[in-house]
Image 1 (cartoon, helix red, strand yellow):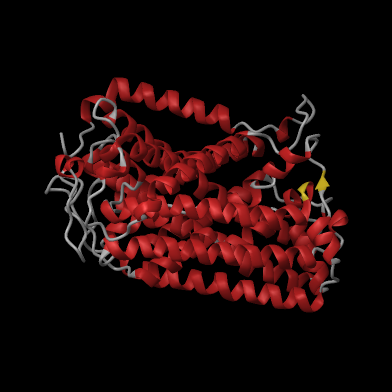
Image 2: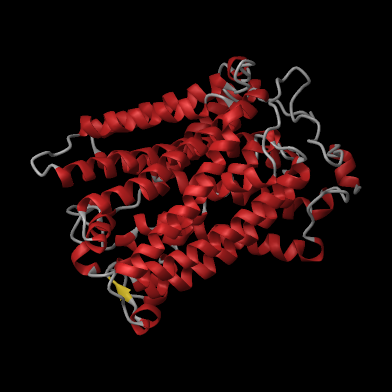
Length: 500
């Protein structure tokens, strides 16, 4: 073991979870996941091919099918670099805190407490925003399907919120007991794969086909940007959206058997699988895109696309419910599971108000139930913004991708600053001689992703189209300021880390 690793006492025993990141009084969770159930969980969390479908309008406005295919290849490679870097860290510190734990062990001592506190809270807000976005997306699609079958009905904000509330509370029921979570993960993985095959086979058989020339060489730009190269970069948005939900396993690692070995394997396996299925889905979508210009006039182009290809409003709606709404719901379950574990882990370090309350594990269901309820209540509260403005809600949830990507960037950057010698030699997952190159590339990639997520997809922005403005940078900056103020007046007096 290196001198740095000895200094920080990061040793762990092979085949077991490392000693807790908290004091001995912190309650623990049972280990119920193995490599394959965790891989299924992560595949569900990304559900990569369905994200391409949901972003149908973005695909055909920003680059077109050609760029969807090429950008998927590039993004898969970039995300694999990042995932490999995180997998190596997870093999050393498989804790529920995930990025927060990595940062507190790797950052320089002078900023370790504050930076890990900042990362933990940003990622936690990101989890909440992402789960809220998934649940609201399902609610809006469900309302659109109802409107399709009942033309006289128009869903008001309260109708959509009730659906959103029902889905969010139902996700609580699915997360309630730990014993069922691996089975739910496997179910989600099976639906992701089976639904993808059903969609691909039916569309390849029934949809009119685009030419190979259109698919591989036709560049489409309705974004308003005049520099084609930049439009190509912005086309990364869709596959990033499909492949950024990579941190789920980090937060359930304390519930995995042989976590130092199984967690990194599951992370890498699931990323490679999701990248491949995302590319296959992109190819099917490109060749079977149909009359895309007509579909773009709808609020949900993919719904019209499904109905048109299957030549049945009932059949198209049913397939959308299974492969989009149901998967979105199960993803919400997965995100709430991860978010509750992160909140529970942070409470063990006294990062949350009422930390002793949120650090408790309900022994009858073996779940950090108080932390889970905190996540659910936060999402229901965010949903209330819908009554004021759907646009305002979208502004808030736009934080999700940036926040989680920030959580990926910081610990890898801290590893580079500290030096790879800080990692123990007996870790179960090693990048070996490629480690430095992979880490540097991962930092560069994550930085690019954050820049992309800060830019609007459409320009110019005027008073008449503020809906196209990307407010993520404003929301992110506001969140950082809020956390800094909280740190100054509360956090720094309570937050502790185990090596101090």
